[in-house]
Image 1 (cartoon, rainbow, N blue to C red):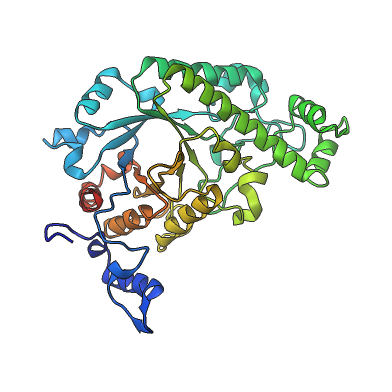
Image 2 (cartoon, rainbow, N blue to C red; image 1 turned 180 degrees about the horizontal axis):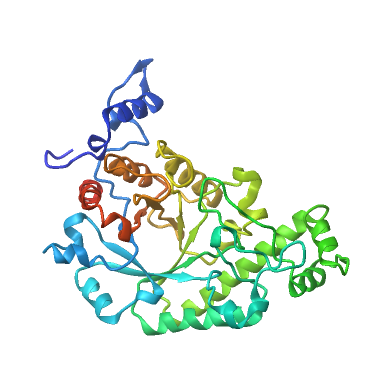
Length: 385
C-alpha cells in the first residue's frame, strides 16, 4: 500500500476491526491480526467501486464552503425528479459528477385527490388505509399507469441526466422500519378480473371471499400474478428509456430483505420479483438502512444483505456485468442515531463485493452534521482509486 494511502479499516474502531479479523482470518491455525489478509476487508483503495455518491439533492453546501464534491471523494448525486434544474445539472456535470434522478413510481399520492378509485383495495373490499402514512396507488389502475409513464418520459426528454431510479415500486406498504406494516392488497375488481383471465381460476363475487382464497389456497398464483404486474411496469419504463435516452441507466431503490426475511414478504407482501426485474434493470440500489431496520450496532448487516442479493441475481461485482449493485447506506439519523464514529464502518461494509458503487442516505440530514460530511469525505477518499 502506498504510504499516502489511508486504509478504511484504520478509520473504524479497533475493537470492531479485531472482531472482523477474528471472524475471517485464520492461517495455519494461528489468528492473523492483519485485516488486509481477510478477503472481505481488503486494502484500500477499492478500484471496483466506481460510484461514490450522495442521495438527496444538489450538495450546494459544499460549494458554499469553497470546495467541490471531488474534495470529498464524491462523483455522483441523486436528485428527486421534482428538484431537477438544468443549470444545476450542467454545473455538476462540469465538475465531473454523474447526476441521477429519483422517480416516484407507486407513491404519487396527489393522483388520488382527483382519482380516489386508484386507491389500493384491501381484503375487506374497501380502500386500504395508508400504513404509517405511506399511501400507495394501485398498479392495476390504467390511467395512473399512463400518468407515471408520461411523467417518466417527460423527465428523460427534458433533463440531461445520467440515469433514473425507480422509487417505491412495490405494493401499498410501510416497510422502511424495524417492524413493517404490510397490508394485503390489491383486491380491486380489475385485479381480480385480470387474475381470473390469466390463471383461469374462478373466484367468488364477494371480495372478502375471493381474498380469503387468494391469501390461502391460491397464494402462490396470486403472488406471482402481482409480481408480474410490477415487473411489467419495469418493462415499460425500460422501453421508454430506450426510446428516449438510451444511454441513461435504469436503477431501482428496493427493499433489502432476502427471500427468507419476514417469511418471504418481499414477494408475498411487496410483490417485488428482483430476478424477473433484472431483465430490465441496470443498477440495483438495495436499501440496507442498518440503524432504521433494527441493526444500529451491526453495520456488518449491510454486507450480508448485499451478498445475499448478489447470490440471488448472480452478480459477482465484475465491471463487465450488465447488472450492478450500488447500495444506499444510512448515515443520517432516522429512528436510531448513526454516530460520526460509525461512518467509516458503514462505508466499509457498504463497499464490499459484489458492490461496485455506493451512495449515502441522505444529504439533507448528513449536511446538518458537517462532521459526518467530513467523515464521508475521509472514507470516500480512502477507497478512491
